[in-house]
Image 1 (spheres, rainbow, N blue to C red):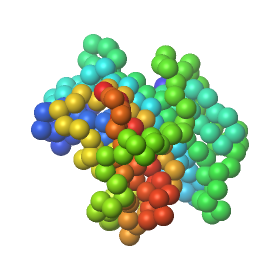
Image 2: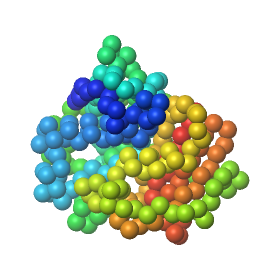
Image 3: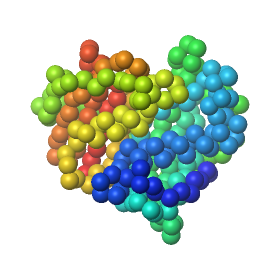
Image 4: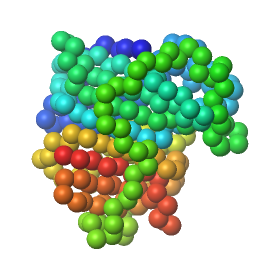
Length: 239
């Protein structure tokens, strides 16, 4: 298990002085990357082997959001490896050790030269100590897009142009940036308690992401797709 203790800074909160779903994803992504760095399987090491772990899905459940000035502990651990997939849990704890957020994630091991998934060899996962999976109701990796009858906004909306500031070290849109953009299409004054994200295709510099928004009962989906309506990502929020 790998832990990061930190204070919630002003730049990490919104107008309500609380973090949001996008910031939680950033916390988790950073924690996972630093664990890999700590066992010499970081960005440089994987880059030299032309491999990488690509995030496939998030499932995040919030008890309460971290607030400005609060000391929190972000921790992560892998709980399984199967073929091309790696399964990783996360938690955020308050100063008293109470659970604030819990999450599961699924990652795909990639050959960057051929840009295709490959099975992780024993050497690729050595050093990642497995721990029991966190207690939660695990959702499928894939999200089914809602039926057209539930669409609120359509593909004719102004597309989002992928700019340099969106990109990570793989030259794709940062995983958390999709969530930040999706938050702009969600209902206001709602406490979001659960989120799932299904990453389908990586968007790169100059791509246009066309938004489609669906809403049913207490669930909203934001789908960013290319011009041919092939999804880049599906973000599903429940409240």
